[in-house]
Amino acid sequence: MRVTRRPRGLSLRAMYIAVAKRQGVSENQLRGTVQNDILKEYIARGTYIFPPAPSMRLITDLFAYCQTSVPHWNTISISGYHIREAGCTAVQEVAFTLANGIAYVQAAIDAGLDVDDFAPQLSFFFNAHNQFLEEIAKFRAARKLWAKIMRDRFGARNPRSWQLKFHTQTGGSTLTAQQAENNIVRVALQALAAVMGGTQSLHTNSMDEALSLPTEQAVQVALRTQQIIAYETGVCDTVDPMAGSYAIEPLTAQIESRAADYIQRIDEMGGALKAIEAGFINMEIQDAAYRYQRAVESGEQVIVGVNQFMAHAEEHRDLLRVNPEIEAGQRRKLAELRAGRDNAKVAELRGQLETAARGRDNLLPLFVTCVENDLTLGEICHTLRGVFGEYRPTVSI
Image (tube, rainbow, N blue to C red; front, top):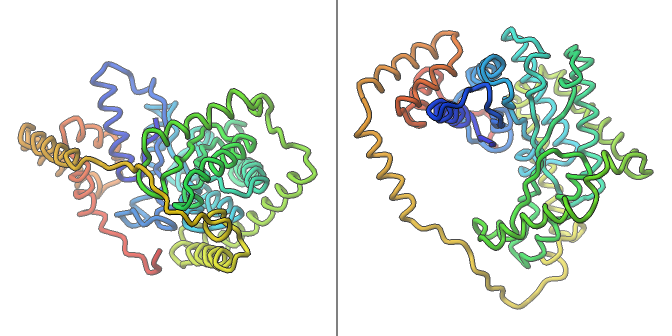
């Protein structure tokens, strides 16, 4: 199971625990991943609510809670995917993602956690783009850098703390609305690069995602792409199949070196959070995205079906249309939930949550109690908003 953003991700994580308890499943048996990565929201997406300090507190609260109660859960998925979708380069994806990882590890240590107690449950989430050899080298460089960071910088002694476990999703921003079937080839090559680069988990985008939510047929093609790579190519039979390549090894070293230089610059600014607040990371991504767009518009960067090899016939596709009754049905269910629950208990728990947020206690146990008593995601977030406030960036994303 993968759960997405904070604070939504933490609330959904609490709901997952509550459902498990209701079904008689012990917390310590649960396995999965929560994205729980707020820094990439400040960098690339903008789907945050709270300022950085309380957001980091929620992250380390989850680290501490899972360490004792849900030991098999991956407590964060540190994401370069969204940073790459915003327009950064492969080197920047590695550098900014690992810089964020450094910030999370340091925050957990500052909160009193031992690095070898929580580091084995850290995970990462990367993008896979079209530059096939560069992407393979990127994944290899990220693994090498992270192992050095954990061993040499943070003094981790457990080899499992050095491992960079990562999920990969093929590049949504590389997909084109024009000649959408071409996206099948793009996705296949991106997925193959991820596998040859050592990914442990993989998502293949559907060919029509540049046009709409994917149709069932497009999703099946995306799934079959993974299955063909897994069962017909043999690339999964060899660990690090590109090791020793005269092209891959120097490219890996180059990406590692350039990413390390970026991390050093970020360190000199005071870390990832300071670099974000100063606008450094955002501007680096914007500059990279601008350079790429200029290359596309000039024809220097060829995009098949877009600026070269265009088809002039109008394309017709069956697109997914979401039934509006789904939204109406969910609204009805929410209204029924609120009408049928113990609203006095809800008010009491919201008061307890507000008090706890003003203190220093771990908030995760109270999150679980709240969702067990039918507090909604919106109510939990709104209560915390009253304590933590809302973040207003000085540099726009």
